[in-house]
Structures are given as C-alpha cells and as structure tokens.
Length: 119
Image (tube, rainbow, N blue to C red; front, side):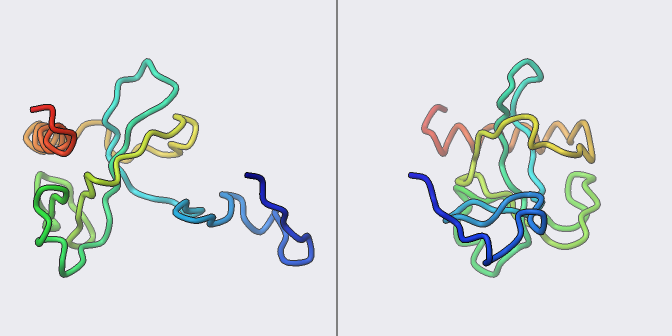
C-alpha cells in the first residue's frame, strides 16, 4: 500500500529520518544488536525507559538499573525482547559499546530463545 502525502502538509527536509507511520518510528532508538557482522540485516532488541508495569512481564522484559552489567545508563531502563526487529544494517548509525557484559548477552539470548520457544 502506498500512501499519498500532500506537499503542503510538511516538508520532507524537516524529517531526515522519515515520518511516523503506524508502529514505525522516525527518531533515534537505543538497541542491542543480536546478530553477526556478515549479514546486511541485523537483529535488534530495543532498550527503553522503564515503565511501572515492566516488572509484570519478566518473560519478555529485562529491567536494568542504572549501573547493571556495567552499562552506566542515564536512568532505569527495560530491554523489550518481544519487540525484536530485523533492520537493514545501514540504519545502525552509531555503536556506543562494541561489547556488552557476557552475563547480560547470555541472559538476552536465553530470553529471546524462550520467547520463540527454542530452549
């Protein structure tokens, strides 16, 4: 389905990262890369600001305190495993940390496997 957009509504130059359409986002997002370096497509799981009910869903959320796993986060955050996405590698603009704590990496991979019932 192709959308028709009226030019007088906005300028495409005002939206360098695209426009919000349905569940897609046009701004930067933090995420953990879960894939190898060979593919042009990478798997990512987003990390978002902690919300009160995130602890209610431990099967699909990993709640992180500011200093957990040596991440030095600005605030308490949540890794959203049920929002796993596959994106083109060109959309990865900046890698803050090339490697994450091995314990956290194993926890993320284990929970992703559980989400998809592979383990």
